[in-house]
Image 1: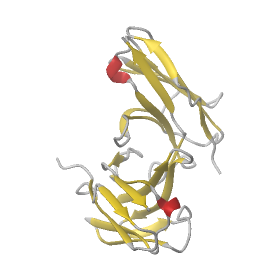
Image 2: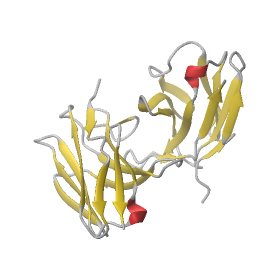
Image 3: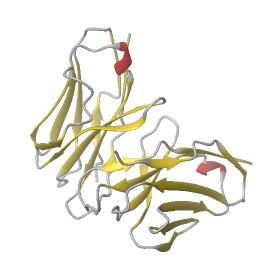
Length: 113
Length: 114
């Protein structure tokens, strides 16, 4: 069984700070990695995907991938109260581009004004 | 574009009753996934289909659960008989052939079994 580990949190940061969310995984073969955001009572929403080692930036969000160390992280700059949600890390099945994903349990983030 | 559509959004039933959850994937998507989410276990994959064919049902908890996909635009997840421990939020998600594992989730069905 593939392991996807996330700190459950809660992670609490002040508005304007950088929030750092981390995820480690057990399968070296995985090639695609995702961050989903889930607001309370809502469904997961894809916010970032990353496939290559290094950083990928999209607005205030930066995903970082290190396949050798088997971790992926999400940085949220200038955090806003609207970023308060649970963030789920997900990765593919044995490097496949299609099919199932494996999800972590999620990290709950609270951004206080 | 319409996203993934699920119905009902909320279902309250009594133990022993049959429950049917419905899902319409995004048009043109070839993959359909059923997930269950609870506080205790997080987001669990129950089953997924490719081109209406079940590919992996290893996450289906027991024989009380069954899923079908009679055509490309409709899938059902049935629980018969339902038990209180089945109470959870059930999500349906779909994925297109060229979307590199990017799955899009429906709003979910919150099931409560009394």
